[in-house]
Image 1: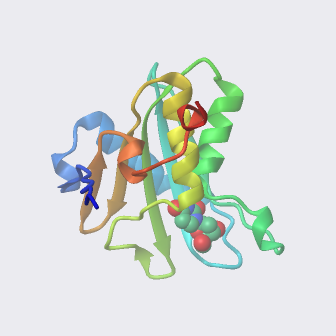
Image 2: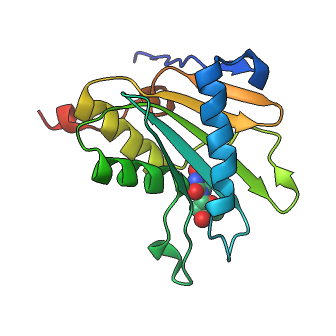
Amino acid sequence: MKEIKLHINVVLNAIDELSLEDRELVEKAMEATDSAYAEYSHFYVGAALRLSDGTIVIGANQENAAFPSGLCAERSAIFSAQSQFPQRPVAAIAIAAKNENGFLAKPITPCGACRQVMLGIEDRYKCHMKVLLYGTDGVYCLNSASDLMPLSFDASSML
Ligand code: THU
């Protein structure tokens, strides 16, 4: 038997320790929470992407009475960006979430399906996507979506 230890690199920064462009992206994600349609969960998630040329694309969770028909903020933003700008890799994503009491203290962490889609974007463009996860306690910063998904499945897993 061999034990394999996996580790990921996460940095917790105060928001004012971020670069200006990362801070702006986090603020866009916070603003995007206002575009959520979260009639059922009352959990409002915003995502903001920075594309390779600096274009910012936002998304917010969109719910439906038939729950599986809704979509998370991250995938709303990513699929919108891919539809409008298919040639532009995603350089960074920021995510923020609030409930009826305001923004969460602990950084929001994306669901498994969104992590898989983020990983697919890195695989498609062969470049890393920086991940910024906002909470009022601080911002988790990761250099790659693959850090959110150890032992992941992508196109190379089928070779
Ligand atoms: N949600 C997101 O938009 N992103 C996440 O990372 C986690 C969950 C949404 C889906 C649903 O509309 C609500 O939050 C509650 O799960």
